[in-house]
Length: 144
Image 1: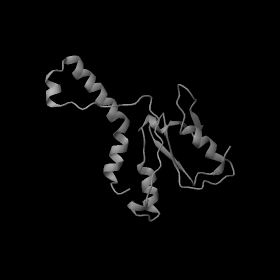
Image 2: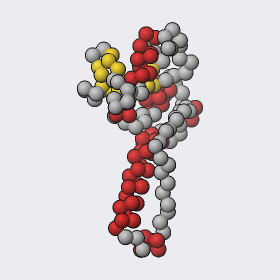
Image 3: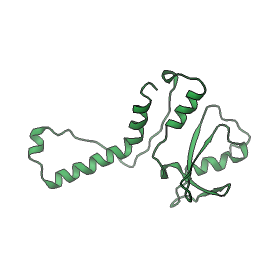
Image 4: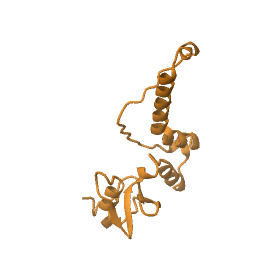
């Protein structure tokens, strides 16, 4: 599909070898004959799409290791001499639901029961599950 075509931007596609846990990053320097497999490997979910066999590795989506690794793209830009404030990272996030946290006042909290507290725990867990990777990178690279 992409064989023989150059990437016009820097890219970082992440996969994980399910046998070793090693993270494999494919980028714009990935040989053209491996690009199709690299793209498929970076999106492979074993329960939906088969693993990609490459160089004795069984590769699946990098999300098996981390939800979103933006730091690889930032490090690539920094290695090319870009300053943090000149780096822009494009991210498309697709979640299975909208996570909305209602604010609780001290007065509200007084009238909550065990079930309300449990539901709050679930909402907070879901919120941080979805945003933890982004929050970590933003804290690590505040000027990007």
